[in-house]
Length: 471
Image (cartoon, rainbow, N blue to C red; front, side, top):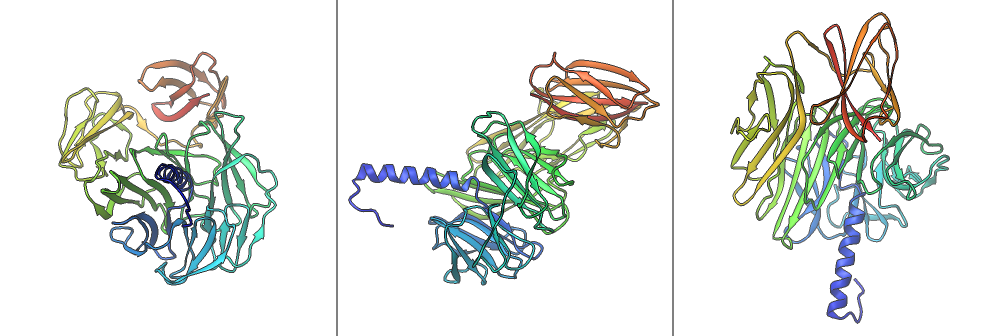
């Protein structure tokens, strides 16, 4: 590093700016990438002296630090066995054919975007969405990118067809909208497929799943994971998570159907405490195994949990899956969020005795800290006469969502009678509509305040629930 004639205060100021810049870059750069084999991943994480590149063949349960000598900003795994790319400050692209081991890197190109993604064939690498290479980064082909606008926030390439890709951008003049673009011709032409109503400052993580058309979208500020199986036409909320005070975070789809990895790096107290956690799932993020491949000093504790069935009969036991982080010595479950501890088990089972919406709270207690996580209106308990149905556009479709002055419930059976109830997140009914013999129900929502609601559609004791957002 060439730093000349810097006084002590100047040096401190420079280090602060460099740290802020590195954090800003890493917030959008790829920190975890999949290798060509199942269970094979590379990731960036803390070491005992700084940061390094790790390699794992067992889903992140154990990992080897293969290089801590380079200032790596972002990584991408090639489809070649042992092949991995990296970007080192300022913007040089390197390639290793030896699993990223130190002294195995070859400089391939300069002036490359910090955001790199591997293609579906050996030697294919993308530099953001602007260009791609088919010879391991030696030469790049530029993309026309017709239809694109805004400031790029994230990019993803389809894991089975690299003609397909996605971009998220924002416009500084529009305060509450992110734009999700899609391409089917390798970014020669892109179109806006979704408008996502989040603040410009929302950090987004975008990745493709194992199967073609699968898209993973994670909002960092709200900690919500969304999933699409139809090329980003529709997204379903998988769950809300609890990841705070992170040094770095990232998400990547795996090499198996339903496989997702979450990377959580924690560092504090000037590197006295440093920990890496890999959360691995094969059911699209409903339940996770937590691996801890690197540990130094005191661990954080973070409460995380889920249940597969969120709409159940009140006679049906609900199984809760716990994937909390840290050296947890005690679990305290409050299944009705009423201040009464209902269970101290790690993975409890609970049966609700009445219908309604229930918020669930989990507190985890470590050696020197406690963390609490509440999921509001997380479980909906219905009576035994109600048939519980999963959300499906074959049963009902909400258009648009998010909405403003009105919304439409479509794809209904025209010979049936329907009841529609809209609840706020406190479980209070704010609107009820009954309609007969119609395929479409138009709802005037001008009386609703902006926010998140639950819309329930029932027909002959059949029930479907949808999360809706009023702008």
